[in-house]
Image 1 (cartoon, rainbow, N blue to C red):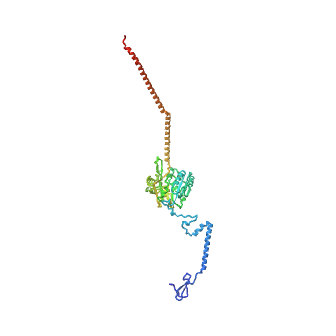
Image 2: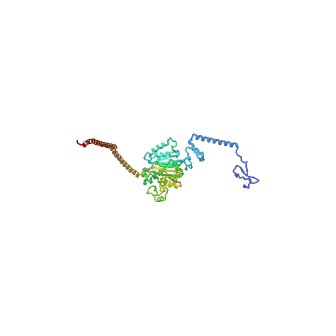
Length: 485
């Protein structure tokens, strides 16, 4: 019910804001709305204004297109303003300087080769000139599509021709006439970290150098990964250059398990006099209560390393659980991982897992990486019966023993040679022994024949003499019997 007023002549000129007037009727003292008080503008004027606006819009659009065609550099400044933030799909990013990546498609799957998932292969190198030909022979034999594998190398603290040899090998493989051989993007990074530990077995695996060496190696791995990892990578594969034997299908074999982090078992061949074979990588293990108690007694910066009497951890090692006839697909949950061959999903590193260059839960580098991945609820497994073989590198004791064996071999060969020479001299001295024996035998036979002939002749002669004397005796017999006259 509208309000009423005492005076019939008083109007409320602001009763409504729709362009119509409101006033009070005299008889009823109520408001009345008059629809014919104000009329809209005439149609011809409205039409002319609309046409003018359309023409101005067309002129602006044409001018903008002409400007963008004449000045391409202005496109990056004009298009974002025009889009008003409505471009949100891959098709809308047509600028050369804009790249759109949907990382939900880079999670990694069990059959990545079918989904064309890219792998980043990382290889830290130091004084690896002698190993590169063998390493590249393994790369060439990979059955995973090579165009889906990006290579990243970090050359650090090298004193040999590692960088020159690497450039030559990369040039050969990328220019191979076989279209299946060339790889994808290749990155070669050179940076020194001040590594003072020598590359010989005794220095690299000595207990005193382990903590500092592992921390520097962790820095090298992190530098390489941060420089080479791209949004297009679904997997990251770490591989040492001194692996001697490995299946050509190792990428597919490890990928089929669809784990966040997975490693094979690593052994090495030995000479027969050392047993023929031996576990090599002891950094893949399950945690033990003894090791946890040991860690609580160590300093904050201490780093536990496996395979040394100084740290008796009594952990189950992946290497010692190998069965040559076991199922190669059998999985074992582990806490620490070795760095010889690691396949990891790229999302593990994107989530923040890295190779700690400090003491993380009393571990560093790859073992610390495994610990950190487990802490962030990623799956970390090893394959105890899937084995690859590391190159045999003799230790100082092995070299000393081999030198002694070499000296014994030389002495034995010398003695055998002297015996052979003496036998040869004796043989040369009695070279006509058989002929002399035959000659002596013939002479003896001749002498025996002559003796038999002489004896026979003598017998014949004696027999002939006897026969001649008998007639004489017969002739003389009558004279003896004759009677004298």
